[in-house]
Length: 197
Image 1 (tube, rainbow, N blue to C red):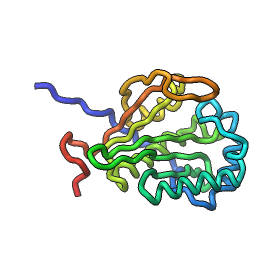
Image 2: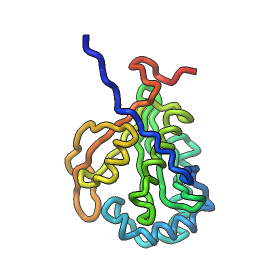
Image 3: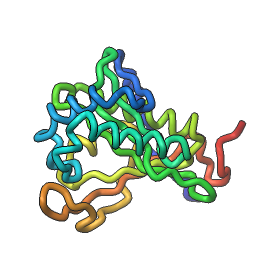
Image 4: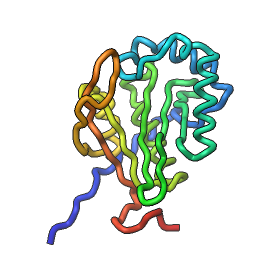
């Protein structure tokens, strides 16, 4: 008889000082400053943005859309805080209910916090939201095939590789292949649609 090994265990990093919260309209100024400081750093990984996006007004427009999508249950848009200071963004996008019960995770942390475990801890906390508060069954994430740091963040959180999507995203002036990762809820038994009460 063959048994399925299941996903690799999530590492319990518990990095002190890192926490998540849902975005607020009041975040516009801090986010605009963070995006401006990290504009060149994020360029290879983020969609092309016009100059307006990096202004307070541009972030107000963006936050208005995010808050609206959160209100309708389409996404969970968060900010990453380190010792109370804004350090990045993390979002559970395209929340699907019904027979899928899934979403996509997207995240970034400022250059000043890169390589310090902040993204790993932020994603760990986002998975707690996805599998706990939102009661989802599956979280997926794409990374460019050359984004090894992001792939390590996913692997440390129990994600496994599904495959590669050819020329999946247009970033930094050209199409790039991306690797698709998945993580199933810890309560997954192959049968239940939602976690047990």
